[in-house]
Length: 374
Ligand code: G6P
Image 1 (cartoon, rainbow, N blue to C red):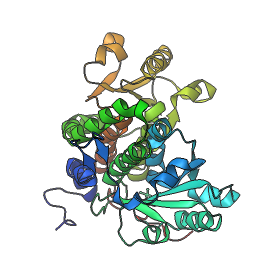
Image 2: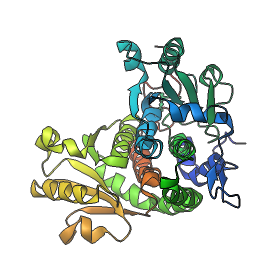
Image 3: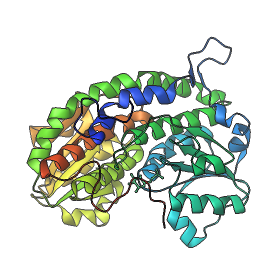
């Protein structure tokens, strides 16, 4: 029964709205509240034998395509922070094109919803040949990537039908946050931070339920943007990935040109595009980059940018003095989990834009759910 639309009109809509449940399933049995001498911990059965090797690797390389790559990018900062191991990112096809360096001392993590993407599989074969420890993060038990990697974690998000990935993205981020917790599990210095993240994970499905209430607000925004040619999304830090993924969602289903931009690069090109017509979404929720994002907003505002700001609940006045922009307020969660909450209004925007523009939301033009050819 998992693959009918239930009360929803489209699979993408259903999959967006079932994220409180899919995230709960992703975490089920994997978070421990404490009781033991170790306190709150994470258990990832599929990695049990390998976690020490991952901890001791010289580098962790994340490899994926599309939304799966973006999920890894969202998790990168917390993996770096808790593991202390350098993390690099590879788009699968680019790694193979370059025959980039992969070593025996590397842990290569392959992220793929389907577990069958040809480019990711080729990169996996390449990493296996080079002797790296290969870890799979997939949503499909028995898929090629799940079978060919040395070990892995299933995200258990349930079957995803919509070509544009939504619930798999948020479950992938949560799994990689749990991976960060598992790798960093032996460090006393970060114990309080790890426990705060575990508490945040327990709370996350409730916060996601709350943010889904923005549905009507995002539909209203979609009505305003329906005839636009282009949309920019600015993010940084934990939410650089949110900018890339939000823009990817909009372009792949609504067929509107959209670009995710690292806010720190604003002055190195994108600022030239800013005028009073081009809509710009700025992700400015509370984290260590907040004041930098406030200054980005001021600079865009000074150039008469048409701003839509995603901010933490209660922050409307701090991000938008004088009420000059449209504000979307989201609940605050632990900083490294904030991308899970922040992407949801953008998923809803992409969905409503597509339906209002009359395009096929579940099967966008020219795209396939699983790209099994090169
Ligand atoms: C296709 C899909 C995307 C997906 C990407 C990677 O392009 O349309 O939604 O993100 O492949 O797929 P994977 O199954 O490897 O996550």
